[in-house]
Length: 154
Image 1 (tube, rainbow, N blue to C red):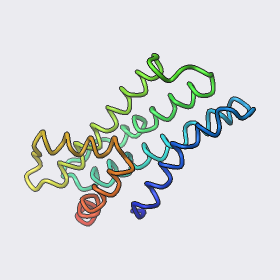
Image 2 (cartoon, helix red, strand yellow; image 1 turned 135 degrees about the vertical axis):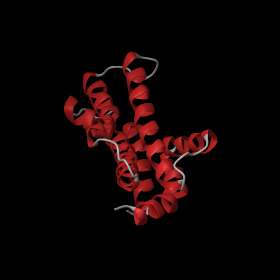
Image 3 (cartoon, rainbow, N blue to C red; image 1 turned 90 degrees about the vertical axis):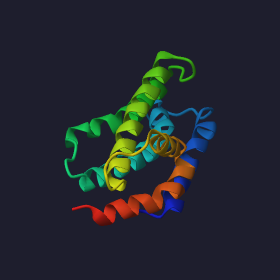
C-alpha cells in the first residue's frame, strides 16, 4: 500500500548499488547482502501483490507458496556471497526460473481477483506479468488495480 514512488525508488537505488559495492573490500556476507537489496524490494512487492490478490479470491491459494517469493533473493544472496557469476550461469538460470514462478503466481492471483468472472485473457496476464518483471514501471501501472482488489478483499 506504499506509494509507488517509494517502492520504485527503493528498487532503482538497489539496482545501482552493485556498481558501487563491487570494488569495495567488504566481507563476503555483507557484499552478498548488498547485492540482494533490489531483488528483496522487487520480490517483496510481487509477494505483496500476491498476498492482497489472494485474500480477494473466493478460493485463496495456500499461504505455503510464500517461500517462492523468497527464492530469487536467496539465490542471488548465495551467488553474491560465494562470488559465483550471475551472467549465463546455473545461478542465473535458477534465479530466473524462481522469479518466473513467483511472477506467474502473483499475476494469476491478481488477474483472477480483478476480473469479475475470474477468467482473465492470456494477453492481459502477459501484460501484467511484464509489468511485474519491470517493477519500477509496473509499480505505477498496477497500483490502481492492486488498490481496487484490496478494497474488495475480505
